[in-house]
Length: 301
Image 1 (cartoon, rainbow, N blue to C red):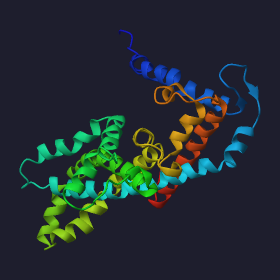
Image 2: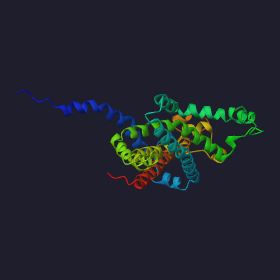
Image 3: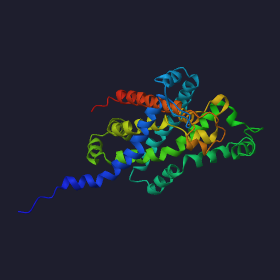
């Protein structure tokens, strides 16, 4: 008899590149960031151990709490209409009698493939109070008489940022909901039709309950992604009183990373260690709201 081939060994070889890449480019930076959060380092001198000083500074930083509030407001304003719109479109475009539904699915998904920076630039130009097309359109229709400085209002700046995020991601969530709808057996609907259930009753008592795992997935991913908002609010500006500045924008400004050097050149204080503490502060905030979402949905192992 020939020797047996150790298939598990070859399996480890095939999956090894992913884990090596994750360890080098994912795990090591995470651990190094944790190390820096306990140090004081400006990027030039040697790191100095300061214990929990960075976290103590973070807990007493009122500006960080303001960014948390801004992030939550923008997340609510963007995700509530986004989820409603994506569910309604999924229900409509999943019907058999709709013509051209594949075309509409592609059209609605298209904004998702556009980078947030591009969308931020487009919307900032559209809502520019001097040359923006929105003001010109409203003035031509006689709705307003003078240009409106949209980004000079805290709430309008948040609403515009929320609109950009909603417009970018509703198509993706729509596709996810359509996938969930197509996973529901047709026999369930046929049985409901035999029992005389109406379309409304079918949607309320069959479709939505069976979509609960999909709702949970979309909601948790929206919580994680929404609390890391950065690109679009950055391109649209901070708003008056930093009303549109989010937690991740604050992280990048504090840590002075290379990414932020591509966007701003006005940094003078290099404080990588405090930025690392802010990064872990954001991590705990995201985990807190994710745990609340999972608990509210009665998620079990």
